[in-house]
Image (tube, rainbow, N blue to C red; front, side, top):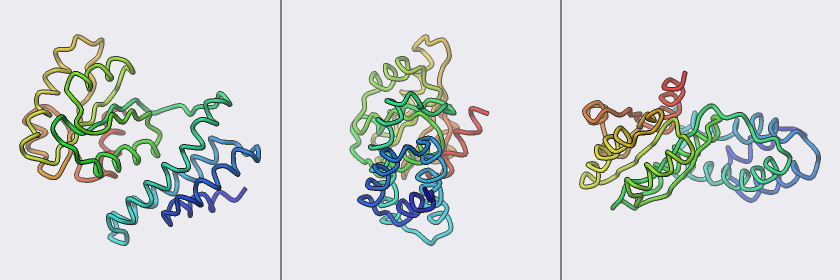
Length: 210
């Protein structure tokens, strides 16, 4: 199979095409991990690059993420059934903090991390500190990512850092914080890490686990 088709479906943000191609991959006997890495994941990485270069804007970025998600909704069950789940670079628990329902930025970061080889557990929005800590303990997370778009919910990021430090886990996960009002200065103040965008978040995650 020409993996460039898989890549292009994601670059084009064509969810229906990405899903159909994923179904074709599963039924064809093609190496599933190879198809994910050289096809769909390569596509979402290219989407991120185009966004960084100013060629793509938020709608194109979201369409690419949706196409990637559509493909992986088919690929991930097939990978599990085949016993071929990829070797992950690290485990990430991510969500938007309690009292905040904004989802776009968090979802983009989760998608880019997943495409870059991380095992991502997306808790959604309005996530309590207790839920973050419990899930981090359950999956033995390497990184916990917490998004806040409102200045009124940023304080939850500080409380999350403290809660994880006091949770008594064998190893305390790194914390990454993001959202429109979040800055490097704020992250440093609360003992967390920060990136300006989704591609930067991948780079920070890679550095933390290198």
